[in-house]
Length: 545
Image (cartoon, rainbow, N blue to C red; front, side, top):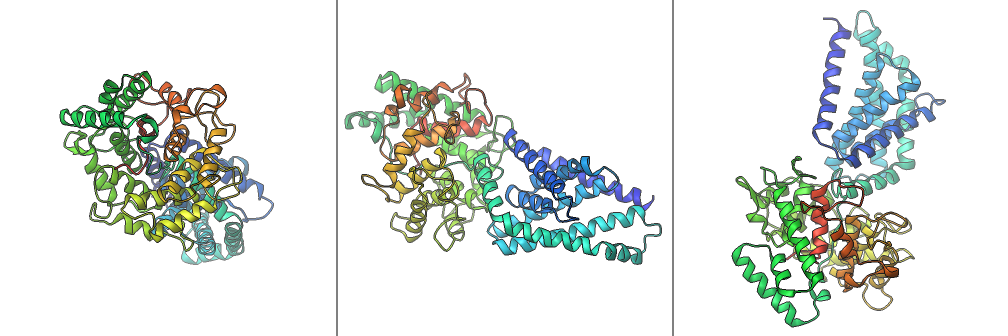
């Protein structure tokens, strides 16, 4: 077998393995769209800078994509970006080498992200990009040596490398400059999408938190009614039926009955979506992940079900949660897992052989924030409170102060920092964190201004979209409801310009099988969406007790 044939066989197997890995990760439609966009951006970056030999932002885009999104998406961005850009530059035997080299850059970025907890500064990350540029050049030199060298001697490889050295240095230095210029901003933008859609947090998306406090008080008209519900819940617990059904039978109110029925049906859907490993995927029958499993645990608990008794075969939802707790590392993953562990009735300081609270505290920045982001800092406050830290604890106080300082003039909050456009999801999270930390109260305070922002963002159908002018969706509406509950506002009475309430909007999205649609036209990740929606429908702000 010849050198070219052998090398192309190995390279082909490597590319096949990379794409197989990405396909086996079962990326959602949102992840597919984001990876495709990043691959197109990488290709366009190469084309746009064609007049400058080897000075292109492509390697930076690929490496930073892997740094934030993980190995499989990072590899896909690099490999697809290479073959796409060669539609302009020309395909040839060099194409698979470029696909493999840039795919490797995505993997390197993912490895650096895991090892550093995605906390590298501007300069260290820039030097990683510089090193990736030199590695990319060495691989392309090797491809030239394999493909076009006759005798394949070391001297020939050195000659080829010496000829291309100036180009490789230009590539590496260009990578360093590009990273210094746009690296941190690019990472923050991707972190937002990673947290929202879960390309790894959360990454609902990141998933968004709801605050401690609120409880049932904002919606129960009398103490007597609260007593009736509590007594009924205890009676139902003895029989094993979901508490929501008992609430409906005891109140007689059409609205309360509809809400309780929705909660019960959602809980049933979640229980039936459990996999044999005890965990949950984004939809029924899909592979389990820590993100969706932890959200499902919280949704089950809100629906009145006990995670330790929710099982498929021999594995319970709690056993899967404990297994996941042993391996989560990123800031958002730790925060979400702490909230889920607390909801399951476990101690976040002693679960799976780890102290998750201590691991989270190690992620703090000098200003008290978590990763310098408003949303993750709000999650941090909620997770610390769930982990047993008091509102007066210095770690809670400093993180809450950071969140409060990020409030925009319109009263809302952005995922990252003050100055960027406010969003409903992030404002709901910030309200709940401030309530949990007992900050920003009073007339004209941060919480009051944030609630006013939410009221102004309600759509005519009663729901909320992610930002100004966007259509309503279940997840943003759920976060808004939870923020309102935490602030002591009854969401049933939030009806802007004659619209229906956000609670009615959520109930209108429920499908016949008990799942909650993302919106009128879309039904993606039903397990995740239902888990978040049921928290709002059940009026259960975080941390669940």
